[in-house]
Amino acid sequence: MPMRIATILSASMLLLILAVATATARAESHLVDFSLPDADGRIHRLSDHRGKWVVINFWATWCGPCMIEIPELMDFHERHKDDDAIVIGVNFEEIDTPDLVKFIAEMDINYLVVRAGDKPILPFEPLKGLPSTFFVDPLGELVASHVGPVTGEAIDDFLAREALRSE
Image (cartoon, rainbow, N blue to C red; front, side, top):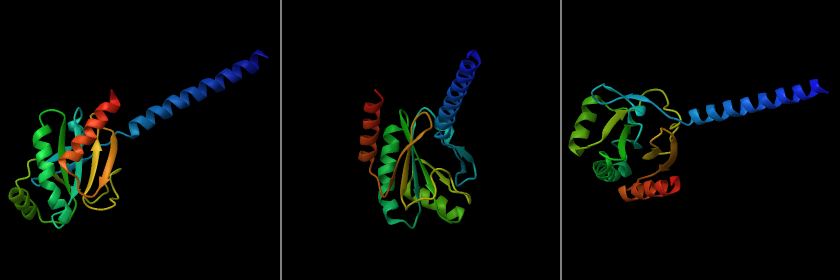
């Protein structure tokens, strides 16, 4: 009988260890990161912005709704960049570098713009459409996404709801 109790306890301990390991792996697997170049070729990592909300917006110069939301994203970024949130634009198209640099300058985009590479950026891709916006919390976890244009007010409302939820 003592052998059977030891076997049951060993099996229970193994299940507990597996549960903890699975929970830890699951928590770590929700943390997202990428390394992408800006228009000048400098590499930027998403994880460099831990501690702030990161609004990641996939867009293209040919996308009408993207053009409508860029000023909203610029306004949001300007209001939040020094405190609690930033915007990163991911240019999701084949465009010559000089044309992208010119576009960024003409639009006077005030947030970081990086270029999507030739490999999918998981878990963000495959995209369901453009523009697509993703919300990464200050710990680095992807917590929400939206397909279609967003407004600064909608992003503010989302962050306010998240703040209430975490209290």
